[in-house]
Image 1 (cartoon, rainbow, N blue to C red):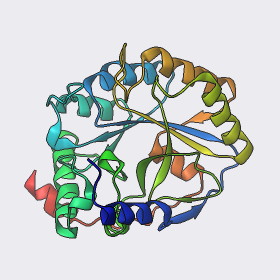
Image 2: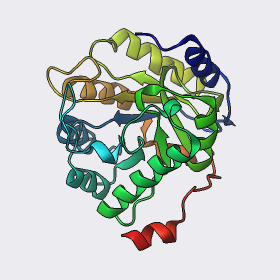
Image 3: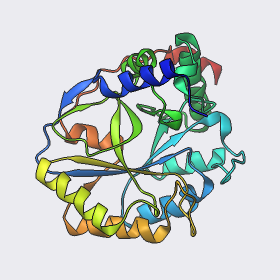
Image 4: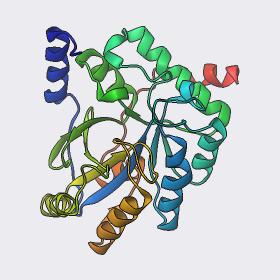
Length: 264
């Protein structure tokens, strides 16, 4: 069932209105590998493949649903989040309860992010959560403006290569799905990134064989890495990529860190 017309209009405005424009200043293309929700296979298989190649990925975690069963997979356990962090991978925010942000008011959105940070701090006291991903890819203008103040970037699910002047409030992606990422499409994406000094952000959910409709096989992940490496393109987490494009953080955390630490 489609959402009401006004909801669709509001989402479209938020998608197409750049609210955090930034002109990239890198002199070479970049690639990031990101995983949403983080099914256990993304931890077991996906992170293992990245580790083989010495690549740090970005894993967007919703702490309130860790260790639960979804329709297509079981989600990562809390102790596995800690292990990813220890291994050098970036942990991003995917809200706490994995809810569409346009269903929340400002206070509820703050609570979602605060709860998620608290959950991550319980696991990893030294963790910094600096990048966000919209659950379900849903975005609204008020929540976009709110979130981009507190996170360096917010990532969506709309396809494209980030190049030139980009919107850090809604970064574009390329699906890392077996069903959609053909070799021809991959070559086209990498050619575009090379020609435009672009930043390609791949995203997937599960990493298994066979994958779900929103996932990739370990073989596809290796193929993509090999093709990227063959072109001498740097593979960086989202956090690592930001200094490479010349971005200096101006985020303003919406929570009292000392107050959070007192709760631990």
